[in-house]
Image (tube, rainbow, N blue to C red; front, side, top):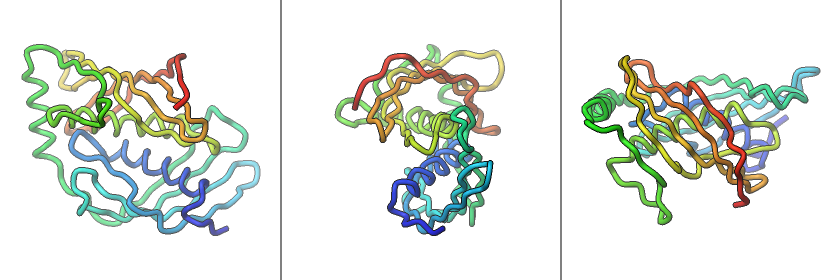
Length: 220
């Protein structure tokens, strides 16, 4: 059944698809977001769940002229709130390489004498210092994992702010950052604190190795 792209079910499914894709393909120098939802349709699969078929146009937040078309499928499992939606996607075209910017960030962090610590990104005025922008993008990319894993047909989560981030030194070649982020649940208007441990290496991309919803929350 065709759905108007502007309707909530279409936008909610698109948000999950883009969050998943951002996590799979993003990093400190690339974060994809939705430019346009061009088409959406849904199918009820008996005893399984609701499946959404989406046609999307995505853009890179650092280079809005860099766009890519994408088709995606999002399956919400019937009646089980503990199973993440299944997401599959196909990109039509190539994403711009971030190899040089990734190398610069990786080398800078590895060469720091003291572990990097920062709070409140962006600040109350919406400002992100340029030197912290890669950490902000890394959190946005990693929060795509949180959105994907914790979404249902009745929620729409997005990153609101990094409350705290601390670099953790490791004996291997990965960079590790421990984040406390605030997620905004758009339906209930809750602001939810979430902890996550993020590993990153230019070769392997982003990995969320631990995530935990925290008990405190406020209304937005």
